[in-house]
Length: 130
Image (cartoon, rainbow, N blue to C red; front, side, top):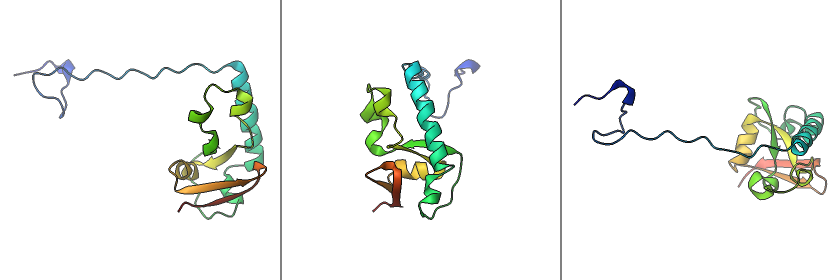
């Protein structure tokens, strides 16, 4: 049995079945101008305060790798702040700049970041989880 070249059956495909459907792209609601402006302001303040990676200045021994990324603390992650005003979602108290390596470790919960009363504007304690 031969197949048309356009079907391009792969190793998971068995004769007699239709080829898998392509996945639909994820649709997201566009951000408002107010939210974009707020994001730009807060990110600029975080870059000025933290530089490339906040982990370097807090005495946490790690090797910085990859580009600098804007990170939110877990208490202000996207799933908890949906449909809130931009002024509540994006603040310098709950966001900081991290290198990609430290940001991925933080999101994987292998590193903890603890803040004092001033949030990320004050001293942080970065330590391995556990």
